[in-house]
Image 1 (cartoon, rainbow, N blue to C red):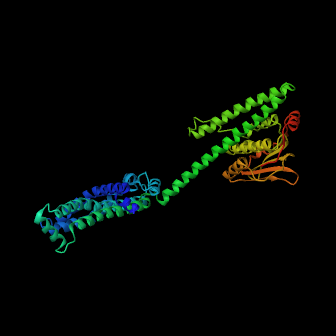
Image 2: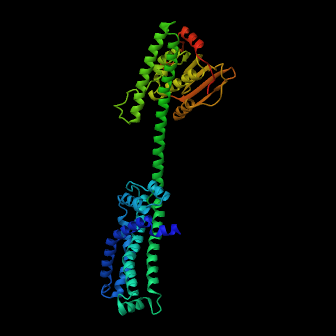
Image 3: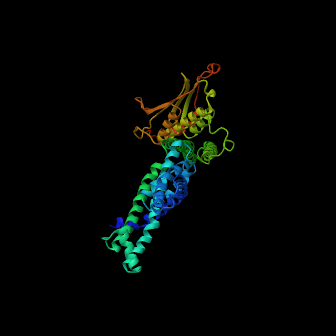
Length: 456
């Protein structure tokens, strides 16, 4: 019962009544023009009282096509959407929130959107005209009936009631109550109909939904890219700095030269991390290309620095670099560097001071990246992975490549990534592969000092 009363006379009903009266006000110019046209087409229609009422009723359907045509103007859509969000939904709770999220706030750019807006506008002014007409006529009639029931108008009032409602008319108080209930019910039903149709007619079209979904997907891809950049660059730097600082603290007195080298590596790693963080923040602030770093991040040309940092952290990396990597596109080279960086960071985090083997080669139009290292002896390995492996998978999928990672029968962990890449120039194919390894003394120290464990 409370719900019914609230729907008839509550705040929501009041707001919807304002919205409907606004529709009636929008209908007035078209209705007046239709009335004038009917008077010109049918001579004498405005002289007879009965014909006047008929012409006024006929003017309502004749005014709707004119309203439909004017509603094709693109700017009508956001105006009607704003009014519907503020008044039509009202205090409708979840339905109001849905209307606010579904209704469009931009002008109609397609004919499908214009047709929907036109249908909504016609419905709005039609129902608004009905409610407005009843709002102008019912309250005076109710006041007259109530007053005449108490004899305010004398015999003339009683005669008027009998003439309108018949000789056997029900009590005037009952008639007044029925008219008032009819007005409230009509307002509630018309408002509910508009609220139900608003998301359908004022909401985005299928084409607009597709564009919004594509925009959302692009935003998510951009956010995922920033997350990967932060994880791979800053995460690697923090892991390396933490381990290098711990190693320098342990040998500060016994091996001051190594401690000094570790501190220099910490400084270099931190400086590089700050520069990469600035690049990522520039992407986050959507700066222009001139305001960002020109290179957009490290590439494979800086791989030697990364390997030297890993050596100072206790991970010895043996490299096998194939020819033609210098001819890779900068974007592909940066992605390959990040994958190597994340792979080596996982070695440092989960296997400790072990030796690793890195292979980078161009073969059959694709770049192959293979990283292999022994599993730690203290903890059993476990399949799966955290954000690191997920980030590697996302980077590979972005470039239409793939990856495999997992323990091998020989007790090692192997990461294999392949990315489509153009064939290297023939002139570079003569360059033989070369192998390299960091300082043996550093690697031996790392094996003695760092804990070993399995890969996540």
